[in-house]
Length: 198
Image (tube, rainbow, N blue to C red; front, side, top):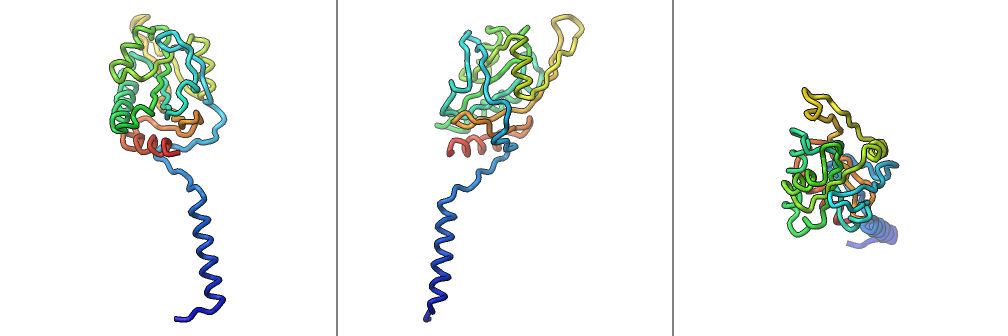
């Protein structure tokens, strides 16, 4: 088969286009809602259960999954924490590159002792942050998170209504994903792996 000059040029042009496509980074696709570039929920500065002030920078190099909840939560919080412990397990060797951060919306009852025990029940590497009531109001506003005290039969038996989704940050500390409650373990494992690959 003989090729004329025009055919050769067409082939070269097609080849260079394919070459360029190979060099350009494909847009990452995620199971959770991609909120890359969002102008909120950029950082926090809160005390952990050991009294140390923590910020996002402390977890650089890890994928951070941040969740707002409280220890006496009957369903959403323990379910989410159990799922995150499973995500960490399923990541295998990369499990150490996942950091779960739990910000309590009930600082009145969630003392450092309570939060240490609560995190320990799921995974001792999970970090609990305990804001003051004023800090909680500020961080909730910045993160567009809802929380509200719901009175119980006694002064201490109240519950807390709160947002149930998680925020996911890449290893550079940038907000990337909004993971809705109930999405399940496999999608989160997949998203964390994608973020770790950069």
